[in-house]
Amino acid sequence: MPLFMSLFQSLLMKKITVEMKNDAVVTGILQTVDHHLNLYLENVETREQQDQIHLEAAKFIFVRGSTIRYIHLCASDVDVFVLEDTTRRDIRQETDI
Image 1 (cartoon, one colour):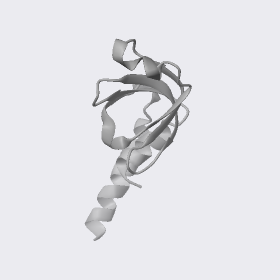
Image 2: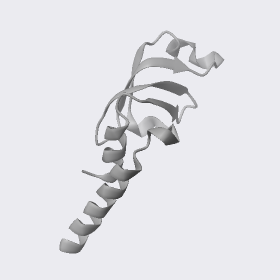
Image 3: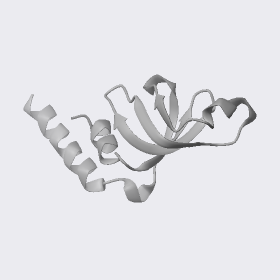
């Protein structure tokens, strides 16, 4: 499993903030993620901005990976051991090829 997938799989059911390329910012509980970095968030909250009023009524949202600028994570939610283990396995696989 690629490193970023391991990271995001460890963040399922955790609160993340997604900043999109159109400057929309949403915060919600990560429910699913795929290899294209498409995200499904529930309990969505938005940063107040006049041009994004349509997002304020959403309880859940699907965010296409190609529209994401940044994903903000809480440092305490990142499982460093999973990242280190995945990195080691990836390095071993590359050297075995």
